Image 1 (tube, rainbow, N blue to C red):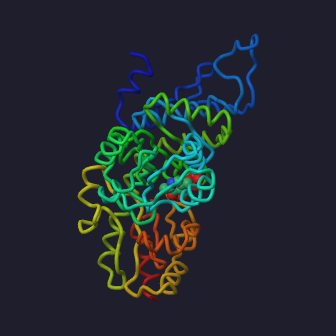
Image 2 (cartoon, rainbow, N blue to C red):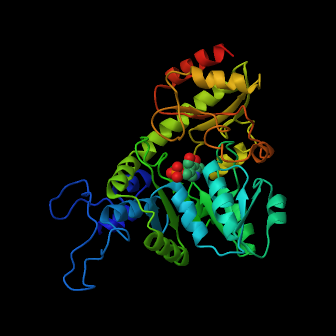
Image 3 (cartoon, rainbow, N blue to C red):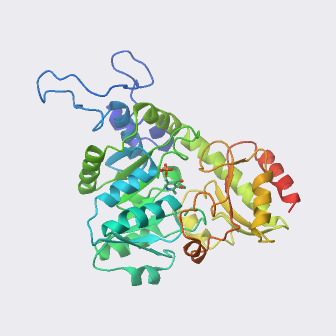
Length: 390
Ligand code: PLP
């Protein structure tokens, strides 16, 4: 059996370590080399070894793309310089007059990109509650090219029914994009549930160590794959080889890290839920969470992200907690080994106008936690001390 064959048939952890990551044929180096080059020598014009110019392709990038495609059960993958560069490439494949229905709880940077960059070019985005099929239905138009889902969503952790919404959207000839950044392919594979495109900010759990910015899109559609390769070639928002190497290295421990992220987050969510000073906790692993039953069906576990509000819902109280943690660092981003705490209203989601944010249920006092893989008792002790003062 060829290496490719056994890797393709292997289970997730084996694919995470080996897919696209064959040892170097010339030296036997177990880690594929990082190809620091901008161009490739040709024997004659057009006679090359599959690589011509590194904006278009680079073997270190190809290795990452093959690896991610294997994890998402995809035929194709294109890596980009960031998560937002992925969203940009998808939107640039649309045309003026196209309409996009988008989850109303989503990463603030994508909201800004869709409304402020693509709105003026005639691509209209409509933000709706995608947990309600009748609401999605009333937003659909003949010109709706894409249904954009983020599940679990950032920051409210709502769960969208990928299977049902994909079936529904396809009846309208609308393609479905799932931002799988929070779940990762370890917890859910949206293409298997009918989605057409899966997007990642590889900056987060995939790389996992808060040391690189990147993105990737996986698909089984040859048509979409061609469009994305075209965007890569024309617009060039590509990751450098060192960045690709860092993401590939991170992915090799994704399954182990995700297990601990999920276990720690579950304990932290239970702790917060029982805390007398904490009000609502948004975590799909809690049995009373609105998305719990669906998340149980759709995901292998509930992820490492939590959002919560204090009972005393004044913003200054939330800011006190945000400033009081010691183990948990106050910072943007998520998905790294270190626990992070953030304030969506002034940080990750500040680019969404306050009234739009509030209408979508994102309170100014909401606190978001990216639960890391430190000892969970230290994370809880840290929160305990920070919550004492409020
Ligand atoms: N998607 C989600 C769910 C995110 O949280 C983020 C960033 O926080 C992005 C996309 C954008 O990714 P990047 O920061 O790598 O551009």
